[in-house]
Image (tube, rainbow, N blue to C red; front, side, top):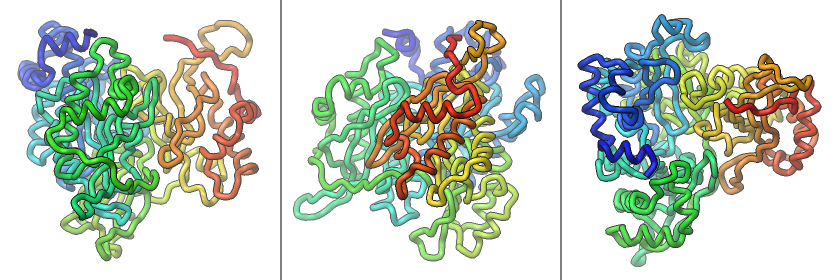
Length: 565
């Protein structure tokens, strides 16, 4: 077994929750926690939804699970208030000046419809949990080798793009796995997505398990349910999910997901941490054999596939949209890179109550944006005039609309480059500097601070992954020439024409990226076919040609060399 498996064998990882309460009561420091429980405790703390903060010794990031991205106004308000009270940067790390964009108390909406808050101290965690318990929120298994937050369409129950509302199934599956000791120790994280939406907003193609809408005739009657995709994922060894010959009824979804988890638990690799993810098991066995293994472990009959109802991929709910409920709208607010103030999030929750009906909600999207729902059409103007809405208007430029960023080096142990501030700055600058075609509403630009894929760069029009780069302009090895940079990829997308991007150029100094994009979009505007989107053009144009276009920029696009830390 690898070291993580040994740590989980020493103590069931869910037992760390009670330990956290004791650490908090005794006011233990990081050194004292490690002295008492060993180095494996930092891994087990993930089951409480907690990550230690890079170089900020003594502080945690806490991840709140939000199944399907659905929050009541009360829940959203509590999240914002908890950030304000318990997630403030201390004076020793800059206080209000810790981050020039967001100050000292902010949250991050993630690509998995979670909420992350920073600067949390161990002694405050029980208080946070108590506040969460009052409104039905949890951080349990927000991280770790178990079922992560279950994704869903953020407009579930609202829009006529869906065949049925799958949010109740999302909630049932999430409730089954959260805190379930039997399935809280899998070989690696287990990522699920469940949707009745025909646009696959919940990204089934890049998840371990995806349930997507389908129709099947059974006993002379037609039923709605799910088709199944398995083995998708990003990071190293990206893979698009494979279809199984299975139809799952909504009432059998929990049992089916349990059987998939059981299969992964029994057959997944627990030796090499690098290949423990479920997609490697699906690749090794083949989808057909994997399906047989699931059927062997499932206690309900599983009919074969019916009619697939997925038509493509949207992944974007920014803007003002009519709901299927007459006279109501939902408003998708654009949050560049997913970061906003805790006070602003609480304001959004209060605005949902003020301008929405009693069914109003806050919905988190996989593109790091959020929705306010059940707003009578006559109230939209007043909602958009609220102070919190000024930075998050629902009519952004195409780069701001498609900008996604991971946590980056500011807090992540793996981050090589800073991401959040850079993505926000670049998106706004690109919207000002580049004149995109009128029919191009969004350019998906995703930035990961390392080779992992928390920002999902492989499925973006433009993807970046962080590198430490030596700018070798004069042939010497002067350390002063080492700068932040990134690998530069083009041409990714999900949907009917799904494809991972090509990493067109490596080790591009950060200062060269915007000039290179300017040259690329000039060539795109000149050479695009009617209605051709940027990622489609990038695929049609040879990579060598794309590199030559980038080199025309007045910047050191190709003069960087990746440097190992």
